[in-house]
Length: 230
Image (cartoon, rainbow, N blue to C red):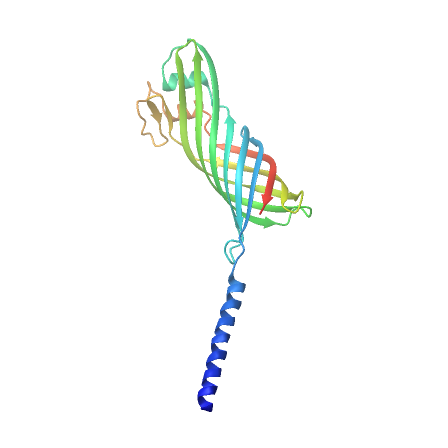
């Protein structure tokens, strides 16, 4: 009888110990992800605005935070007359009007650096994907066409967060992005970096199209904004 009682008590203690250990392990190994969202504006090779979200402390032992951003930039599209010759025709009638824009998706990894005692400062780097559109319109010339490209790139920089309140930060960002050459497409013509052009005009090549169209290449960034920490 005593042996059965001792075995039962030992079993209960063992079960309690296993449960306590599991709870303790769960507490020490669990993470509490933090989310920050923000909006900023400034210069990004043109006037630009960017919305972003940051996820940090989402994996135990992982030293970086991750940020996903989407920006829109108003950019210079390039030379209207050269674009017309290279993608359309050699006509010289009409008054040219032009405008450009670039949508940019960014994925960055952020690491804290000891730079400013009054702010939380991070170094960041990551990949980019840009979609560029340059519009060229010749008033009185019966021409209105887009030249587009899709490009991959990389970027790096620094940003600092200055506390405004317990949850709101003022954000200062500076960096630079670099984009690889992308295929330029306009009307029914395209010029590719690998030379696989479609309906090229006359003897024009990709280098001519790239010189005429101001698709993203090196893009310095200086932006200011606000961020909210959940």
